[in-house]
Length: 336
Length: 297
Image (cartoon, rainbow over all chains, first blue to last red):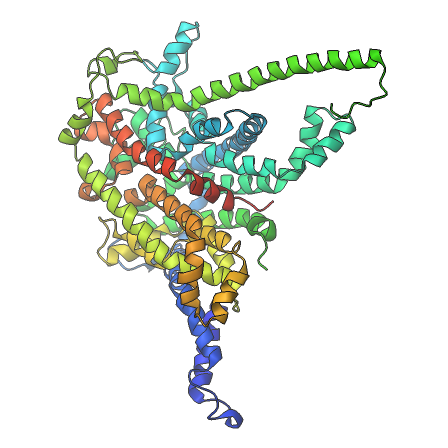
């Protein structure tokens, strides 16, 4: 990115000095090369400025802030490694990391597996496929707050429809969002409900698997599972990787559903200023890393320590992103 | 089956016919199995929404019970929720946020995507990778410095910190549009350039008409993102309820305005309906957008 800026500046500098003596008089000003660069800049300039102001600057500032005491009123005050040292004594952080890793380990595979299974079912169906596709997809459209409210209400322990139906067949339903053991699995169910976007990507990927491969496997006497294992899975593996990486990153920033489910299920549905009061309900079972980052920075006012958490999050997220970028061409198609 | 050899004797022909029948029966069974599974899944996917919808028509007393079907229908819940809460203000704020952010995003993102797909310049790949990184990284990474920046500009407590950055475009939209624009053959552009069109004229006269589906997809995604956004409005407007959006307002509805579940679910349905309606109008562009930003197998 800096390459293009210095490039342009360099071009401007040369033009100001003027063309070499030999061609003086023949080259119009501004030169074709400079004009070309200015044209490119007129297209990409705003985006480049945005990268600088809303990404590069805040990233560098977060690293700087992580060595400072920062609040909303006073100028930053250098404290060296104090914030970083606290990282290792922060019990809330350990708890939040544990929960976030649990979500990464359970929610991501569950969503990828669920999306592949529903996509395979859809692709088998001939009549009415587009109707089913729309119905399976619809929940993915629901705003996260709406989806969370819907799930908290159908999983209400006492009067919710799910436990009412379970009671009719003689099963005592769990407390779902109100139970420390069941709150996380309830959020996984919620995530599975909104599987539609991932499913559509797999529907397209599965249609791209060459049918000859299946025919060849049939001739070799392969069963359904062997076909899936040896033909389908290798063919869609780039998509699985994409789904896994984007899934892990989405889970690292998992915030809305956990915050809203806790606040609504706790019954003290306060938001805005007070929402962090119910974060993690019940008993911290839904307390995730981004919730702690938010609480530290914007409720406890420890913006320096919050920046430490942001930098750590950055390191994790960028490492996961690099896994995807190494398969750059598969990810974005040809860059020509 | 059409390739049955003509030299076949009677017994094999009979076996094949028996096999045909068995296969037909199997096909019927598979058909029934597939559709039962698909119908069961559809029911599970729809059930939470249907339950919300039914609750939103219940009376204040019935919504406390475990009933699933309204004994008496109360469409007036939808009017009451407007009367008793600032829902209209949430709705207006959400529309302002979503529409202005989407408009500004397009102004900056379409030219950027054009530069990344149809113009050749040094550093292009580096910029493209930087944009992918921004798209992938959690927003929490840059939250603290950005918050301080907007606070010193005096704009916290409003939705401006979420709208103004769109003047520089949006990483995901640039990525989506770029993925769409690379599929447009260069011959179209070259023809315009030979006719003496500059790059901006080529973009406006040649590329924009072809790229309409891609632009529609980017616009819808951005609109939905803003409509659904919870973290952004929570971060910047939580202290000022006048600036709250639907997502933020809904999460705090019951305790803050002392309304019952039936009214809260009515408000929830009102948040969901515009998204669903927009989806049905633009389903094709939408599905195309999802697949475009997936992966090139």
